[in-house]
Length: 167
Image (tube, rainbow, N blue to C red; front, side, top):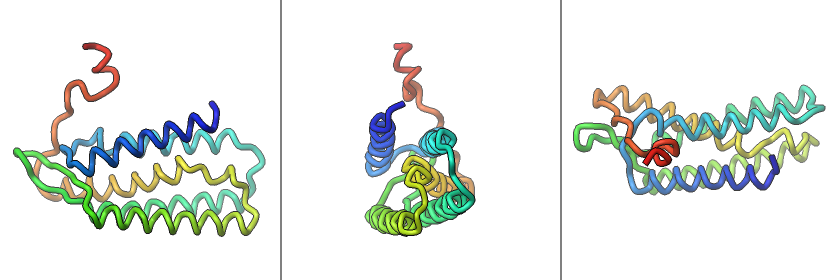
């Protein structure tokens, strides 16, 4: 698959997720974990296609994943999780966007540092960074949801691409 297709796919997923969460949406497990799993999977797949990575590359990959997971967890702590109509809802706040911008800057510095030390640019797939960041966010928001005692929202009928095709 072409690199531009990856970039377009990643951008589309991120834009859809951010817009939906800025407006506020019912919180259900599939919506919470789908984007992180897809993006992380694409990132791992991109790494599997790359040959010739050394121990230092894998060390930076692991460190970058841990950093992304931690920054995502911080972002997850800023998301408004509340009860509405008897189920959990989530909504990004201004603080969420601020933390996201700061996270982006930190990850850009981390990538520049990796480049400075001569690590392979292919060893830092963007989809992996974004995916683990969303995963950190999802873990914190999911934990907060479970801890609240309020039920998660049910799956929405017609929300998946397969459901739309059946109409």
